Structure formats: structure tokens, C-alpha cells
Amino acid sequence: MHPAPSHPAAPEGRRPDRNPAQAGAGRGGDAQQVALWQQLSAVAGVLQAIREGVSGTAALDAVSTTLRPGVQALLFQVLRNLGRAEALRRQLAKRPPPPDADALLCSALALCWRADEAPYEPFTLVNQAVEAAKRHPATHAQASFINACLRRFLRESDALVGATDADPVARWNHPLWWIKRLQKDHPQQWEQILHANNTHAPMALRVNRLQGSQAQYQHELAAMGADADPIGTEGLVLHRPLPVQALPGFAAGRVSVQDTAAQQAAPLLLQGMDRTRSLRVLDACAAPGGKTAHLLEMAGEGEPLQVTALEIDATRAERIHQTLARLGLAAQVLVADAAQPEAWWPAANGGALFEAILLDAPCTASGIVRRHPDVRWLRRETDIAQLAALQKRLLATLWPLVAPGGRLLYCTCSVFRAEGDAQVQTFLAHNTDAQLLPSPGHLIPRAADKQGAVPDNRFGDHDGFFYALLQKSTD
Image (cartoon, rainbow, N blue to C red; front, side, top):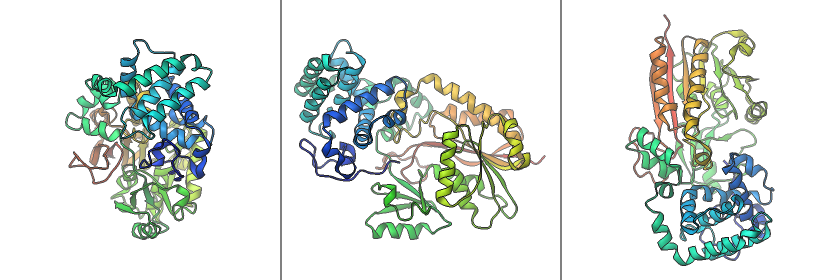
């Protein structure tokens, strides 16, 4: 979760009633020193990188720190409206312009197609997009074309939008294959999922029970004017996001930022286990370390819990160390591939079997599109089968490492059934020593208005997730 930007005065053309986080305001007034055309030019550059297969996070990292907060806010709105923008561009031009010009044109259309949600007045966005086209070498030759398209859109917006309403990609702002997959996987909830994906995710916190209670921390937040709703035993959902530096005791490890759906992992894995004896626990795909830390926090002071955290990428493994250090916790962190235990298992607790394994498997991330709106445009339908094959391999590899009577919690941040219940049903059919314990199954992402809520989901505004708790027989 990125901290919320500060709230400088709205520059000319800015909707004064708009949230500056949506309008591209920067921290400490930086956005007042940066022209909107510069931000739009950078947004178009990041969009083009995403279209070429670069993740939004990596593409944003290449943007200057002065521009980045505002660019990210504008980019997220562009990505949430990209299907509509591309449909409008097809109405305005028989053939798409060169990629750089198309990215700029679609960015402008995505930001201004709904005047009531535009971060700036539409005419301001159009003027500044044309200015961006004129000033960038890659789009200079297309400036007149972009100007003509956008001016026509301002004149004929109602008719042009109406002409795209029947296009499901324009209506839902997801690829067509994604929409069809959800219609098949969740025939009763697919519209709710797509609606939630296009909303802003809340900022959720997990209070470190070793350093205080949920109620105490909620009271501290309220004292500083930050209201929050309690979720579960340690979770709090802020009414408005805050910079992490403003959270009481964040640097000292009193609280972490973690979605409430992800907060269910540690309690599910440890509930009902005999914790009077030493427990060996494996977090198989652990970065950035939030679930590893939650396991250790739940263990409590003095209770035995030997946690091994695996991460295949050394850079991401360093984030686990940083997370644990901030929270004052300790675990064995290994840079290793969970699918190749022969390379790391001997070093993990002497090669002993684990009483509990958490497998937060690599997946399409289709359940966290609110927080990562680029995911829907980066993924291809073929990715589902490829990732499902990897998940199957990880399950098959790690199950033999579970001690008799022990358990494995399989989870993904996906709403696709191939990565959730279909995967688990196949596993159960091939492993007669496995029993499925009561588990949430698919958690459907929820929008803040709670309309169309799924009855068997816990109350709360959370991401999409899947959980299956598997126990090994003692025979």
C-alpha cells in the first residue's frame, strides 16, 4: 500500500472536490511544481511499458521521484478505464496511431471520458495532453491528430460513449477472456467481482499482538482523527489511507499493512494445533514476509514456533529480513526454490518434517486487481494453465514434507477456480492421505458499498483470495 499524498491547493483546472490522490497531487506540494503535461507524458510512457509486458511497479520505478506519486494516481485511473478508452479511440480513428501516441491518446480518454470522475476538468486534460504530445519527440508528429481526436471527443462525448456501451470490454474494463472466465467460474458473482476490481482498495492494518491490542491501537488512531473499523482479532480497516510514517509505532513494529483476506492465513494454519510442543512451520513462498511475521506474532512470547521462510528471489528475500527486523521477530530465511527441496530441506530444521506448511502459491493475482490494476492487462489466458501446473507441482513436492497429523494451507490471491477449488479437488483425488478441513474456499473481492455481498464471506472490504486447509492422516 502506497502512502496517501498530502493535500496541496488544487492547481488551475483541478476539480476542487476531487481527492488529490486521484488527481495526481504530490507529496509536500511537489505536484504544484510539475506541469500536468509532464505527468500525462509519464503516464503514457508507463502505459506503453505495460502494454509491452513490463509490470506497473517496475515501470513506475523508472519514473522520477518528483513525478511518481502523481503519475501513479493518474495511471491507476487510466488502467481502471482502459477498456473504455481503447473502445473510444476505435470510434475516433479507423487505424490506431503509433504506440507512443496511442498510449497518450488513450490515457487522456481514460481520464476524461466520465466528466464527473475526471481528476481535472476535461478541457484541461485535453489541452495538457496535446501539450505533452507537442513536447515529446516520439509524439510530436502526432500532436495534431491527438488534438483533433480529443476535441471531437469533447464535442461528441455522449454519442461516442453510447456507441461503446455494448462492448463488454468497454463496460467492465477487463479483457474479454477475463470476463468470460469469471462468468463461467462465478456465474452469480462475476459482476460483483468486476465492479470491485474497479474500485479503490482500502488500507488495512494488522496490529502486532505482541505489542498491544486491536482496541488500544484503534483508540490511538481515533485520537489522531483517523477512524478505523475492527476486522477479526487484529485487523483494522482505515476509513482513509495514511502514510505509513504517520501510523503510531509503525517503525517500532506495532502494526503492519496487510489486506484482511491475507490476514486469515496464519490463524487458519495454526488454529487447533497443539502449541505446547515445538512446532516446525514452513512458509514456502514467503516474500515480502507479512504472513511469516503474522505466524510469529500469533505464536506469542515464549511459545515454541520454528519458522523457515523460503523465497526463490534474493532481492525479495531481503524484504523478509527487513519485515522481521522492523517487527522484532526472528525466522530462518532461505533463498531457495520450494519446488526443489533437495537443495534446502537438509538446512531447514535438520531435514525434519514440518507440522505446518503455508503455501501461498504463485498465481495470476486476479484477486488483487484493485491494488494492482495493471494485472488484468498484463495477464494472458494461457497464464492460468501454466501457473496451475506450477501450483500442482508445488503441492505434490511439499506434501511429503508434512508430518503425519500435520497440515498444509494452500492459498492463492486468485479468483479463478483453476487456481483454487479445482486445484484442490484434483490434489485430493490423488492423495488419499489428505483431508480437507473447514476452509473459506474462494473469497470474493468486496467493494466498500457492500452491495451484492456474498453471504458466506466474512464482513469486510477485502481482496479476492482462496484458502484450503489440508490435513495429513496419521496412518
